[in-house]
Length: 146
Image 1 (tube, rainbow, N blue to C red):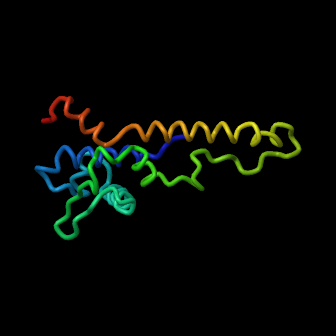
Image 2: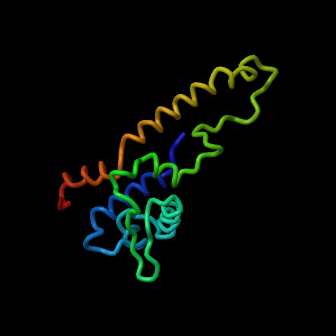
Image 3: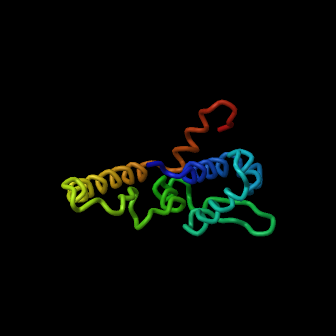
């Protein structure tokens, strides 16, 4: 299992908006230069964040800003915006365990609840952290004016 890099790219986007937003227009090209990915990827993620109501994107001259205070945007909010879960489930269970095998016949009974618990624990941890936590952390890094 691996959470898509869209999640960390989205967090990076918010960090750039907070760090550079007062001095620069935050465009997909600007963000792509910091994240070191193709601007097309950035535009797709920006679209997902906008559709989730987390950012605002100015048309024409461009520029991206957070749609609400960054201490009110959690990692969980970002995760939901960019990593669409298949049917709301983090873990995709293999489709057809063999019903003639005692393990295959019972694996869902034994494993399903545990996987739900694991997903809930991860999601609850994500709700504890905000974009403000990242921005505050960056203020203590070399080369970033706080």
